[in-house]
Image (cartoon, rainbow, N blue to C red; front, side):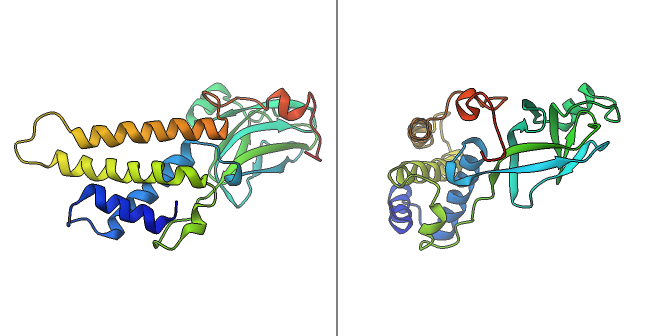
Length: 224
């Protein structure tokens, strides 16, 4: 569904003159950010090989990395690498990064990647990560939705924007009851659209900690 049509349908469903097109675009961008942060879109996924120099426990991350890494593999040692999401947890687990050892656990710290120990020789690690999503600025920016399946754009973005709008409208209604029927309606429709998206993408419950066997075919090389 085209973005211009999506915006018209949102306006028709909300029916509140206090909301402008720019408000609905803001809701859409919030929804896109939420989707990109929780789902793995093939067209937003990238991988790169980074190097941990000998006797060094940190490596530079790619400039186009937005979030991640989501998984990693040590090409030099031919073994999976565990990715920690939280730096505090990583540093609590590995209190002395100056020790020597193979890179088998990593965590992002800004624009660098920390290894749990420093290798004695250079080790190359392939990481998988997510690219930044483009911000939708006008109703004609359909190309910026390239990573979302065309058939699911309407259900995802319309229901998310309506959910956000009615969360404000019904929460601020004078003398309202505890019920927020329109917010609850569009929240449920949005969750159903999210479930359809996950089925479309083939996303399993949760994210694998390591590179799965079907991806590496039991091994992995620079050519992958």
